Length: 319
Image (cartoon, rainbow, N blue to C red; front, side, top):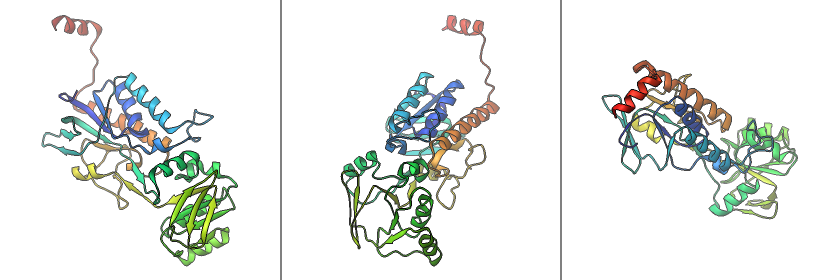
């Protein structure tokens, strides 16, 4: 496949990229997915917001099922990292991913974002995440911390907003600054005080999971919570978009139109690399929109007329 000209190269194998791959393959297009295996969906112990799974579904299992579905329709999925991409004068894209260059008529970027983690051992972090002691998405799992003792670890930029959002799930809520004394605006301090959110000065020197609780070392001493939410921001994976000269927003996301077209012709983007809403269903919806746009844009350049059975048989006899 690497020697063929693809109709579409999908970069990223998370919910957005795999949804697009399913659509594109069912449109009888020649596509490839190159996935670095770092989708945030892999972190999800159980998603309860995903419609159709009443008991919830594990993130890794969801991705496995989506890959299986895409491959059922002929999608080629390569586990690798695209390191470079450019667009030639002929309008074709060339991407390098370690197994030689890939040439494609269109590219869909679905590389998502990475949450910034608190300073702690990686294995301990991942184990705590699996147990629900560390959580990153209040929209996804706020319900699961209802009436529990919870802390938000975040500075003035993100901490107050996340704490106020979570206040609708529990009255026992604490905001901890990871770096030093609480330094929020007068307006935010008033909102937090009125909401009954406790404020604890940092720095946070240690985060240590325990039995059914997680411990946080602060300037006020060692505190225990049933869950913590790091509100430390995230990094959007837009490096490939920058290589192509695609327009980015002020918050470093790929700017697209209502059909997921980026500013570079033939280049599309979907999922959290466009808007960090952190929702599987939203990413999947954008993947569906992007794939249909790609199909229709390609059809404008060359008619997609399927040959009849007799013509296909004649072609087979001649080969």
